[in-house]
Image (cartoon, rainbow, N blue to C red):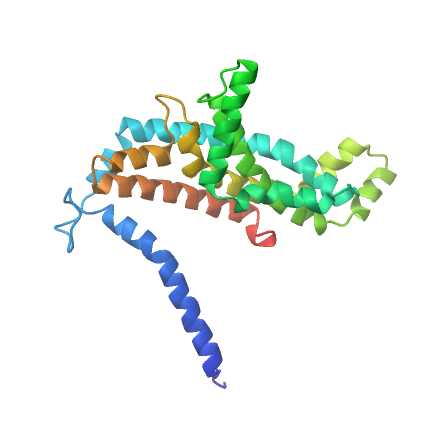
Length: 271
């Protein structure tokens, strides 16, 4: 059995990759470590370790209310984003639309636009809409969900379009030749085939909405806070490991959702 010899270039590349991965994971490691500190004021080395801050985070009404609002907003925004983004993806891939590439770029703009700029623009738009129509848009849950839908749609369009681009349309033609109508063909053939893209779009769209801070700061109403805003407000008055514990709980829930999702739908196919 011959030993595999790595070239200096490959060794340097692997070393750079490990350093980059360590740099990315370092904040996560420190936040997780801090969540188990026993003392209230973080200091190094720690005086001991305890789980009390997880109980404190779970018992904080502001964190719980923020979590529920973030969860509700993320789920509704994801469902609406899928309902709007999937037809848009089908139109972009299946039909020759005038200025199709420009429309595709326009739909992806919220991914690259700074959150502060996007939040300010939506804030001004909602105020002008409320003045023009008299509807209570600003600060309402519906206005927050509508804004979060804008940051979900790009993920849906991006990932569903990628799935549709690699889809063999002869399968649809075979189903239609066997008597299936357009809707039945879409429901029984097309939709199951692009399921990895749909699930990945829903997952990444929800995570983006759930963790959004910059845009939500402009749009939440009085007495309402999402979880990122609740954490930020808590840090204005206190700095203790309860914030780290709340962040760890959030990371664990999202990580578990991604692991379970990847177990049934291979995200690597579309991501």
